[in-house]
Image 1: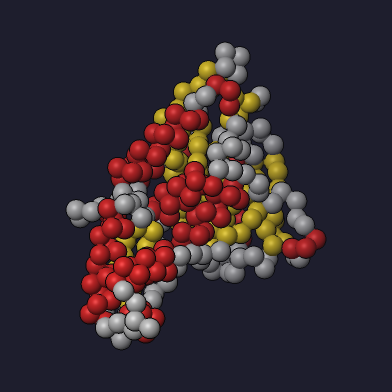
Image 2: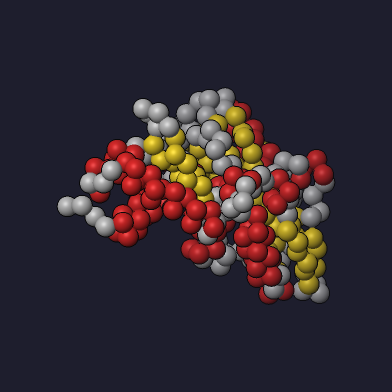
Length: 282
């Protein structure tokens, strides 16, 4: 049965949004809705405009016999800045201060709406890059990595300090924890990451930079390439050499456990990301 345009638009939007980075032939939609390709192309133009306007992502039509419609998730600069400012305000609550100079983030990385927006932000940073996998350190980085993996449509792998028997043989590296000046070990199942993969690393908090260095070394042990590192929050006390290792959404500028005070600013994210493909008036 032939569908009405309003029904096509709703269903097509839902279909594309749930299949990022998956090329869908126009003939598929033509058969699905029993409509002409010209009508489908008009629908795609409408959806493309709405996606850019609402900060959902970019819709592209790839010409040729092997072409189709491709959805790339991404957000424009204004929306990214507004979300980061809201998150910055949320995280500057002094009640978040933990012993040792850490910041309580569990409620943030457990909130599905905030996680969705964080995932979209990081996916924007790596839009259109040839990524094979996302790597994160157990346990706090897992929800963030999972959100990013959804938007980039790639698998994520979990690095652990102690291997589990269910993961089989592992490859391990020792690293300087940085924040506590102690050598620790991280491991990853050999089956998790194929050799010669292109990887991005995700973490929730970077204080001493040791974990990031360890992840970088582990990627090299798999004869793979680390395309970039992104963290939710970084400590402003990091030396510049270590800060260059990662892009941060937010930066913890100061934290005093005794006086229960902290200050936070936006990190390097806004300066490092090219938002051009996702701007409405590009």
